[in-house]
Image (cartoon, rainbow, N blue to C red):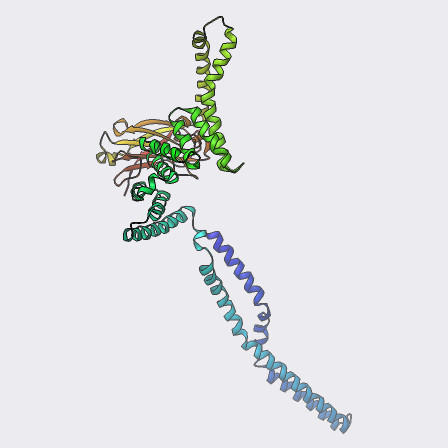
Length: 431
């Protein structure tokens, strides 16, 4: 922000220097403007006296004296006119001063009116300001709907608005007030399911039911397909998850960020669903009918699965984030032993949905934790895919992961995936 204002000030100074250039010599000329008439008159009197002496000495004729007098008078008139111009220029010095004052003020006023002063604020301040503006707009919409509640489209808009600012409970209530339209719209059902996934940091039973209901109503709905794949993956039905996302992929712009994300999710689901089948096929060939298939699978497939699992675990460990969580002594009387503790990692620059999460109790504190891709809530959003993450801890009074008044919180600094030895103190109270 400071650098922007310094650059703007420098540009104003350069502009003033160019615009005020005609006034630069004025001050020097104007300084002597008042004494020029007296000086010119004295010079002309001396020259006239000299001519008179030449005429008395006989070195100058009467005709020459008359001609010289006329020339002196003409020169005196020219000098007087020049002096008046200089004086006028000195008077115009006020115009230059006015320009030097008005130009910066005009530039600042136009920027405040037509520019974006908030754009130079730090990122966090911009986010807070945008959130505050959004809160005001949402409050106006909510008041309007309370006065005219028979408006399904308005309640849907309000639900989406609450969802965008993370007010999950308010969003859920707004969805409920949409009325019968909700159960007949696959898009609205999918949006409600998505909101519940974000609220609960995973698929609850209701979110699963809403996703399936949306797919029954509209099998090709893009959001429902995306959630359907995530729900199947979360339930261990990797083949179904891949099939859902493969149905979604042609609807996305090729090469787009969404398409690449879905392609990565499909590959991961196929890897998990197809690994066991590939190993079984290989066993059948090796056995050659000498051993029963189930015996060969026990003898060979199990070690192969163990090796693959070990390789995957080693890969996840390289990007895992680990450390220790402790409850500040000052807040020990604010927590009950059975209060739920949520430990989760979020991308510093990215969606608010956690990349990995772990659950414990206050009685377990202090607790050593480790978060990795195996605890991902959605397969396309993993801890290893983030550039920087922040580990947050919440002691929930309600037992839910969503923020609540009186919850105890703590968080780490921004770290890269693979960071170890983090020390997180739960030392804040949610207002």
